Image (spheres, one colour):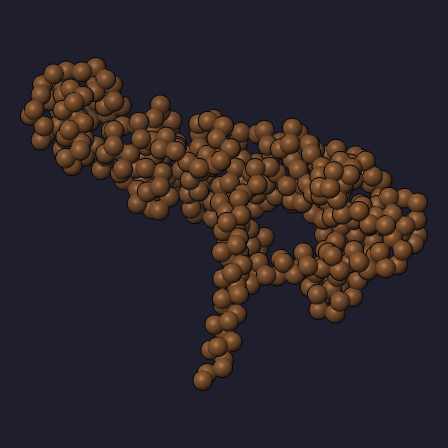
Length: 372
């Protein structure tokens, strides 16, 4: 028996377990307080609009779990030295901070009383784990300089919980060494974070990113880099749709049309039921058509958002050709119907001859589409 393969297989199954569990997780509908300190507002803007979804490996998800597993151990250690630690509020729920009508939310690890240097001051508790390199950088610079995202998170949570101090406790995953730092509340900075969150949530156009170069090292590691730099189309969901249907489930309907503000690789022209995109590099023109768009069914199938997402994109020329074929092959009815003409009006110059000689009624038009 090859024990090496057996070990690999077992590890892969464990990783797969994490991946399957992660797929079942619903996306959060709010901007997280744990991410508001990120220096790239464009990344946060794309994240809130579900432009893409991080694809973590099972190994990395297991690493995340390692950090969560450290929290109860640290809590027990704090209680062991005489501290009072509250992990939930008076309602038995995790401490939550909410701003901007619930669109900016955060959940704190807890509140601590009885810390040695300040036993009477309640402290926000923030627990983290770090690798050896990151841990040493923290020892040298402190949390504000070394981990500005964590620093911002604590400032926001202190504001929401009306606390003036936080205790930041980090465990070195390599050596189990602990780093602790008391952090003072900075009201001005907390208010700046709220203003930043408001911009991200309410601005209809994407902010400028930290770099226009997709090979920049921070961009290469970003979960939204490919969408941000126009290398991929956004995901298909209600947050990426131009229509404001208020569907909080996020599941796209047949009327989905991409919000052009999320498509950075193309210029766009918006019509009632479709959007015409022109690639900035190649000049290729593509259609994004919803089910009720032009032409019915055929256009929707050729140019639907799902096909667009998968790269099976029909050009405007292909769509015109499909319409021409419809009218060339249909000699069932010559009854002119205004709604048929209206559907084809954007391309009147291109297929005008076929409209003039082969206008058909809705019934015949639908039958013909069903036969194709």
